[in-house]
Length: 190
Image 1: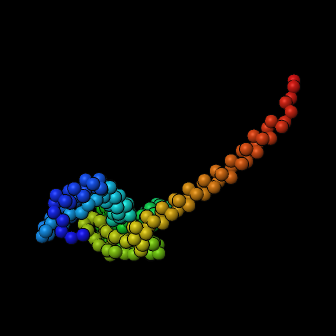
Image 2: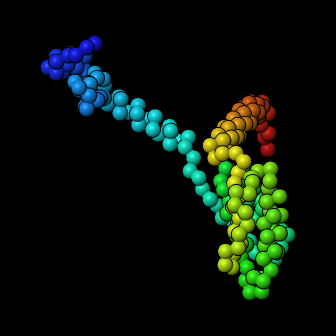
């Protein structure tokens, strides 16, 4: 449009019921724009909200084990690790040694290697097992990113919701048929 005097720009803004917004104050001459500022702020807030919704926070979940763990307890802990990796979270696995167990760190190392091999289709070893005082620590990272896992979870939730609604709609006609049949029966007189 070209350079417009400030008074003329304010007059145009009032005429079209818009706001005169300064876009680049440091430019020579300063750059202004005619717009509905309230609408602009609302739309930018909605874009920011949508961006936050799709943003993933990296979370490190922790699972603590002992070197002499029972097979069932191991399966339970492994199930938790699998769930965390499916959700796209990193998992820090800590083996806690007590007393004489500290003289046998290879037991903890073997346990960590076994767990890593059991969940290798979901995650990889991000940090190799390290002895840290009484504990041995290993970090597993997921193969898929948190955003992908979140998207899959949303799709699965939508599919379950649609399935439930489909089942509920299938149940309603059956209930209507039962109601329709009930008055057809002759009342029994005693």
